[in-house]
Length: 365
Image (cartoon, rainbow, N blue to C red; front, top):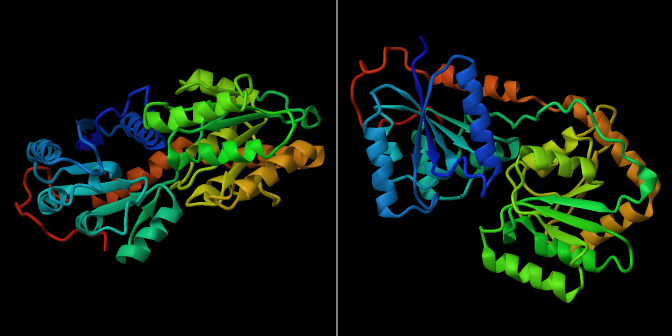
């Protein structure tokens, strides 16, 4: 029987009020590993990761010390990047694999953690190249997020105006809702609506400032904040929209882009981080959406204006999104890639029989 995998996760990974791409990824791959016969023991640790308090580090240490020697331990990068005071000390006793969604560096603590790990897995090639450039890590694996197959798509009418915009992101400054609002204000008297689906409690002051703009511009019937949506309602939102708009200031990958494309929904997004990677290309060429420079509401307004004014553009992007759908990877591929890394670094001797040690250099470099 395969030895248990210990998974160290930030507390609240399943909190429906604060969903995130990292949390969804963790849940999907851990469920997939369990389904393929690898027992998973989950250890949730509280704290303000990746900037923990001393008590948070103490809780993490207490969780790790009870794990049998030689065990395979998968640590979510949100925890790992802030745990330089703890994780490297276990490199000689445990086989630690860091699953890094978004690098925080360049940061000396993150470098120490990743350098001591038995393996590092990122969720985008962009993140991998960041780590190689910052820290000189030679061997970093990539396991990109998957997408669920959508059997039945709603009809999309390019001649219908394309006025229904959807932004799926927690409402905080990093996601760029303020930039989107500025762009929308520049569209003049064109018709449009915007549904903002995402957590409202990450930065309440930012949310309040955006809501003040809604009232000041008399957008009460045009802009809706739904809060986080569960799987069914979110799928309905994708199907009801004409265009996904993601004006993020930073993204390691952008799982919502892949989710939108799985629904045949074209995308407008900023060209930051892994977003171009997530958008990809249709098999016969052409982007299934448009990319704009970050921090440039004028450029964002320009592409939204073109989208609204040009039925031919809407038709071309819609066709490219439809062609991109079959090329999207599935979650079982992601699970298989992660499983291959785990198998490679798994201990060659039975758990509990390896010689003890603390601070042994890892294999990631």
